[in-house]
Length: 392
Image (cartoon, rainbow, N blue to C red; front, side, top):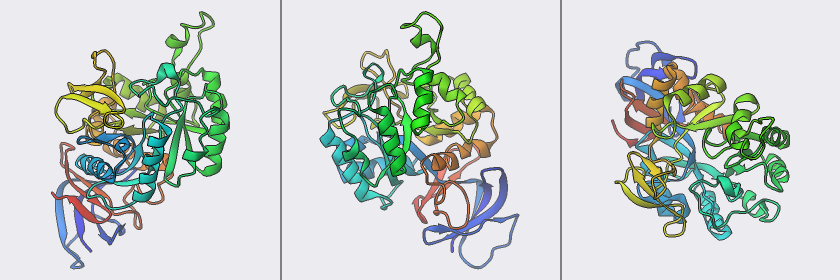
């Protein structure tokens, strides 16, 4: 059994100790400054040992997008995100034709928990085509529809689907959310201009999570454009107010200023707030033009200044950073203790996705997924399923 000794990051504290693993499972952590046990090789690490990061909203990286529809594209994305500490992820679709989504879900089914040389796919985030057209953001317009007319059963039947997004103001959204609940899928709200009342009703139908807080969503100011008085709350205000809803932020040092990251942390707390990348294929690639979604079939965007932009440079268009950037950004912005920030990258997203029985914390029997961080919180080593994919 190999062991690593250093500052172990638990959900509630950081403590010196060591942890080992057998096969793909962690052993019980041991605390304190311990003598070598003789049971296996010991690596003494002058830094932090965290559980592997789990990204529940990610589209691509290193030139590939999950919507490209090939196993090689999946492996490329997974290897890229492992360099940034991600060990498990939910492959996330884009708005696309039904046939392209079918191919994406078939690949997710076939690659569940399979070694990739990097992070492993633990499921799919079925994301689109059920977006409000006015809130589609950088997603392609072709393929947009609503659950009442573009029936979702063909997509939700796939065993890989763990989370699924709908704009709650669309016709058929209530039945979509009820169907998700029947199938054990987490119902998400996003790309929506819904009112607070519509969001509250969606929660009653089973909605539990909201995609990328602050982005592509209604708020008081937007809704005032259609009704002068009384002013109403939208998806933004409902997300902050309703304890039944978890949410996520893109902490890439570009989408949100520090005060917005702090607000999200302050109101939702580390048990209801996850950090995600929302990264597309331009992550770890040079500046230039790229396709968001399937190569040649999605939406053309531009990478510049560390973020994805619309071609005219006036709008945000996905992200291009890894979860390690989110770790450092949220630590700086929130002032939270390290264990709470790491929890937003590990145990909290695992709970949101229904995966916390196997991932998200340094506990005996959970997956042997580890991230070695130096004192500046840079990723220096990564273990996935008991195998080194990034060697310190």
